[in-house]
Amino acid sequence: MKLTSSFWSPSRAYTPEAHGVGIVHIGAGAFHRAHQADHTDDVLAQSGGDWRILGVSLRSVALADKLNAQGGRYHLVIRADNDQPPEMRVIGSIAGVLAAKNGLDPILQAMTAETTRIVSLTITEKAYGYDRAKGALDLNDPLIAADLATPEAPQSAIGLIVRALQIRKEAGQKAFTVLSCDNLPNNGQLLRAAVLDFAQRVDPALAVWITENARFPATMVDRITPACTEALIAETEVATGLKDLAPIETESFSQWVIEDDFCNGRPAWDTAGALFVKDVTPFENMKLRMLNGAHSLLAYSGYLSGKPYVRDVMADDVLAAVVDRHIKAAAATLGAIEGIDLDDYRQALLQRFTNPNIAHETFQIAMDGSQKLPQRIFEPALVALAQGSDADTFAFATAAWIRFLSGQGDQGDSYTVQDPRAAEFAAVCAEHGASAKALTEAIFALPNLLPTDLAENTAFGSAVQAHLARMMQAGMAAAIKDLAGGGHA
Ligand code: CS2
Image 1 (tube, rainbow, N blue to C red):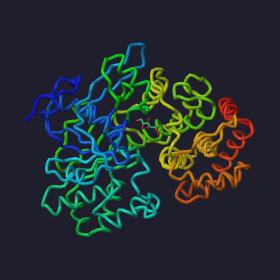
Image 2: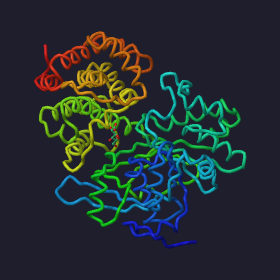
Image 3: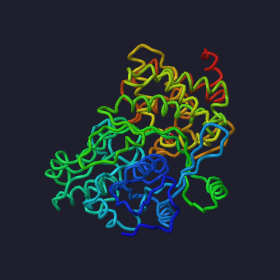
Image 4: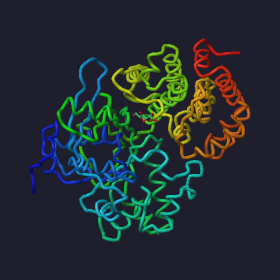
C-alpha cells in the first residue's frame, strides 16, 4: 500500500492514503465539504478506519477535475466571529470525485464495492424527485421519469441508489446505509420512501430486500457555508502559498444530529462532535423553522431592500428586529427538546447571522423557495395558527417571497428567479402581477405548494395580501419599517 502522497498534508496529522474508502457521497458541493468531510477527517485522524469518502458529482465535471488534481485535498477556511485571521485547515478525507458526465460505471462500481458501507447525500431539496403531498415519487420529474424507463442507466440520485442496491442484492452482498444530509424534515424517511417507491416499480422483490436490509437514518446538518468565490481562492493562496482551486469558507459553528440506525457500520462521528440520537425530528424542526425559516425571511426581504449579505441584514437594527421576531415566533411552534434551551439557540443564531467575517449572499439563500418554504414557513405558520398565536411573521415572509418572484427589484432592476418552478411563477406574475390580491390568490392556488389548510385560511391570506400590497406600493424598505413599528393600517 502506498502510504505517502505528494499532495498537501492534512492539518490533522494522519496519512489519508493509508485509509480505504467506506463512504460514497452524492453531491460533493460546499455544504458537504464544510461539514461531513470535516467530521470524517477528524475521525480518521483520531481513530483511523477505512472511512474515506469518494464524492460523486451529478452535474459538475469542473469540481471533480479541480479536486482530483489536488488528490481530493482542499482548504476549509474557518471564520470565527472575531478579528483573528481565519483558520485554514487542509482536509484529507475525500479520496476523489467521480463526475456522472464522465460515465456511470465507475460510480456504480464504487457504490457496489463490498467496502462501501454508507452512501450519503447532499443533493438539495429539489433532487429527491418525491412529491410529499402525494406521498409518492414525482413521475413528472424528468430525471425520475427517464430513470424509470431505463433503470439500469440511472441519472438521478434515487435511480443510482436503487440500481446499486439491486446489483448488491444480486451479488449476495450486504446493503449499505443511505444517509440524507439535506435540509428536509424527516429526510431519512423521505429518502426511504422515494427509494422504495422506485424499487417497487423496478422489481417488487428488490423493494422487499431493501426494506429488510438497508437503513435510512435521519440527520440534521448545520453549518453556514457560502459558495466559493475567486476572492476566497486568492485569499487562500496569499495566506498559505498554495494554489487551491476548491477552497471552502465556513463559520466555526458546526452541528450534526444523527439517528443511530446503520446497517453496515459507521465512523465514530460522535468523537468529532456529532450527536447520535433515537429521534432527530425535534432537532430538525428547530433548525428548519428557526434558522432556515429566518434565513428565507431575511433573504427575500434583505435582497429586495439592498442587503447583499446576511451580515448586512443584521447590521440594520430594524431588519435585525424583524429577524428576531421571526425566530421567536418559530420557537413558539416547537415543543421542548431534551438538552436544548431554545432561547440560547435563538441568541446563538442571531450571533451567527451577524458574523462580520462571513459573506453569505441573501441571493444564494433566496433560490429554490418553492422547495424550501413548505417546511421553513408554511408548516410553522399552520402550527402557530392552530395554537392561536401570532402568525404575522410567517405571512410577512410569504409576502416577501411572492414579491421576490416578480424578478424585479424596487429600483426597476431585474434578476433571475432560480427555482425549479420559476416558469410557473413567471406566468402567474405576468398575469396577476399588478394586484397584490390577485397575485396572492394565484400563488396560493398553485398545486403542491401551500398546504391546503393554509391556502384556505382567510386570515393568513389577508395578512399576506396586506404585506404584499405595501411592498408593491411603498417598496420593501418601507414595508420592513412598518413592521418594526408594529404593522400598518
Ligand atoms: C440556507 C442554508 O441556502 C439556504 O437556504 O438557509 O443553506 C443554511 O445556510 C444551512 O442550512 C445552514 O446549516
